[in-house]
Length: 224
Image (cartoon, rainbow, N blue to C red; front, side, top):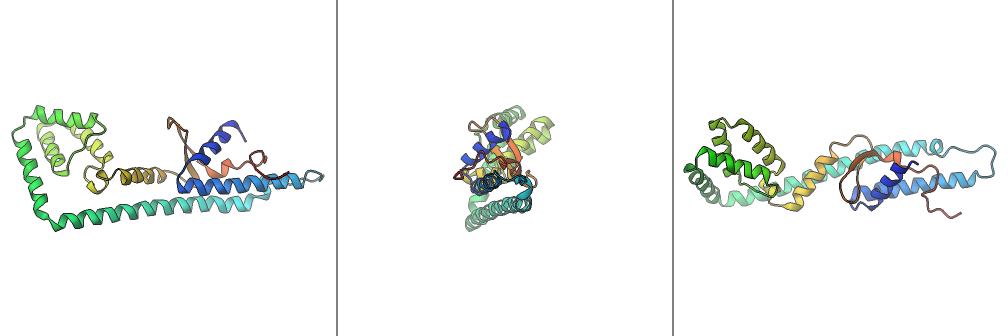
């Protein structure tokens, strides 16, 4: 196993999410099986190739990783739907509050000039911690559109989408927002790929889990 893959194995072992834990555990079992094959064949003339010997099991493992990842994504979607239903139920109990918020937004922006609206949009885009309500967002969008500020409008839409501005059940829940981002990242992976990050988060790799099996047995904790 090359140095990069050894590093990725170490980082995968240290990741705390459920998917990483179960994949890491299975990789350790494969390491141990490879080490056992090497140890058992040490005195034999014809030695088995651990990679060939484990081929069928590894093929099943690849499919299992993809299925487990799909299950995690479905679970996140379920949590998101549950949060949305709770938000909408609470909102529908007091429709007058939503109407009042709409009126406040209309009045808030009515007296502002185009330059002030553009400045507000720019400040929102540049401040990753900034939030905006859906009524305020719609008012700013309408004003940018009418003033021909197409670039500012595009940037505003991009920032609002990234921060779930039109999905308050996510925007108002930091833990759910983090979970949704995790699910979106998982959805970009293919086959048995795993997302592996270094400790400081400066790099992230998409590496097939099956590539991280140590067929040399050097990473296995198998008694000699």
